[in-house]
Length: 334
Image (cartoon, rainbow, N blue to C red; front, side):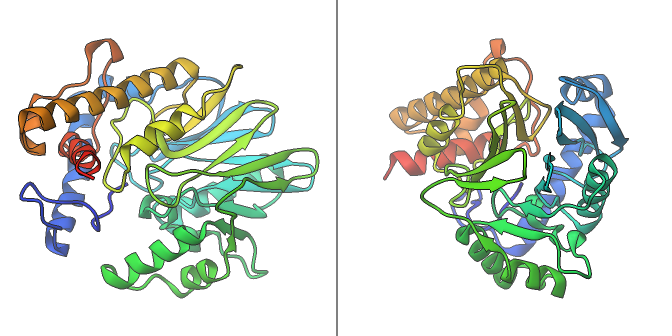
């Protein structure tokens, strides 16, 4: 969710560790405050949609997407055990899980849900990008037999290792070993995973980070988007190349009914993706206007609001408008 390396303060410098920790805590506090002050509003954002619920905990729910496909929808307003969304895909010869959550407890819970639903432990885990809320729990999947296999891009493995080495205490030995032994995904073409009676494509993308992938099923039509897509939660642009983000989100649009599992927020359909693209376009327009008028990102952020027709979008952090406009201004400046 929040990566300090390319986050900048209002003065344009990279924050130190103290500033990062302060900001990270403020993200959690901001969500908790929203949940306490407006529980009905928060509940409406994370309301059930598109299928039955097989498990429900304070940190999230397992929700049916299609036959043999489930989404983990994180509800991080008070409990950050999972923090990000993820999923489970079942085939006749294997089970694939998407994301390792923010911590080992979340990953262990997701693995247990996979076993409960499919009768077997996950064989593979795909990491959609390197941010800690998607990779932090990897040790929670570790089993004595060495399973499951971890699938990640070379960029994801490199960026996680660099992040751990530069800012945070070293990860647990299990996490280090699992990342070191990860199966590296192709960065120029989709990787096809054969689960027996079902094929899953892992497609290299970019825009949210330099390490993005999506996990896609064609029949039924389901896309696990990672953080390329957020639904009813304003996206984090901290590592974004905004024009590439918009381009890759547009490429996810299919000409048939499709269920989308965003990186954060509730399940989405085609209409939700359309609203999200309109939101991205509105941020670009605000940044271009700021550039024309010589406004700084903080000043432009105070003038920005989500267009009313797009409905309400919650914020992980009150600084996210500024972060988004800053990303666009950096790109526009070349």
